[in-house]
Image (cartoon, rainbow, N blue to C red):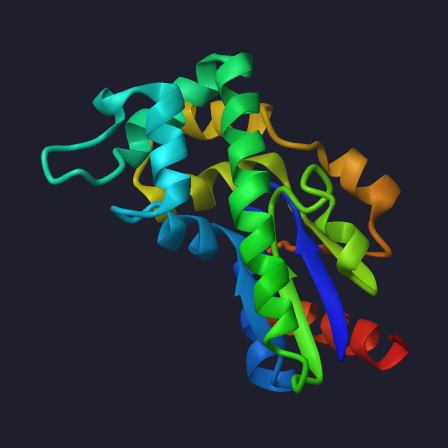
Length: 194
């Protein structure tokens, strides 16, 4: 079993890289954002802990998490952002590690995590691939994907690790300029070397 970590800021193109690894190299993808979403469903301890810290106002009438409201709260307040990150690292990282333990028969596991370094998940990876892109490309992708304003997209990027931080730490860097063929060639090169 080999484990590859994929990280990069929002809009860099981590999902595109993961899709290629899944389709062409039969990788099993563990998407940290999807794990977090699943764990914030009603009745889960992670959601209960979020409510305990942020208050019941963070829930809608059906008792589900108001994601956009929580997002705007943490963009504005570092203390709240750190509190949410600590909860995330407690519950989501534990779940990801359990998933890995249950996937011992898989040849290649990929962890897609924007907070790979902050959560110390890079320590369970054999290699880390950092995905970077031009700022404007990232903003356009975020706005289109999440249906948010450019201002919100910039706020999101401002609280995330810089491309330079990722370049200094990742084993490999993929620059995503939107050319799928180039991305596939880069991944093939890394996969062959790895």
